[in-house]
Length: 133
Image (cartoon, rainbow, N blue to C red; front, side, top):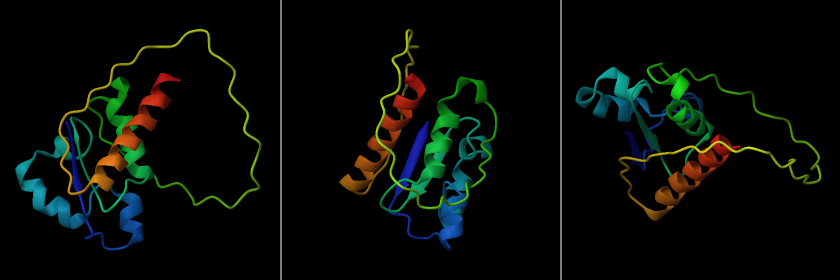
């Protein structure tokens, strides 16, 4: 089960936004209603963001959809911010001979705006593309 709380402007600072899938404020509000495994990725996830998802949400969803990580707590290590680079030419990857079919499911999502809906949909599609490669 995935639950997204949209419009969460209660992150303490940018560091908290980069390191946690849900603000401390939102976690305090919902933690009494769920067991820990529903909050930390072992069984499901509860995310919060303001207007769009961040890289921590992408990695958390990859963890959630990876059958090998089912039952394991999500541990996130923020990546160092990359330095600007010169743009490289677009080169298509070589075609693969076999593609693994992956079935993805989406369960419960709560939103306040179409922008948040679009953000989650784009995140879901990017995860699906990565898994199918």
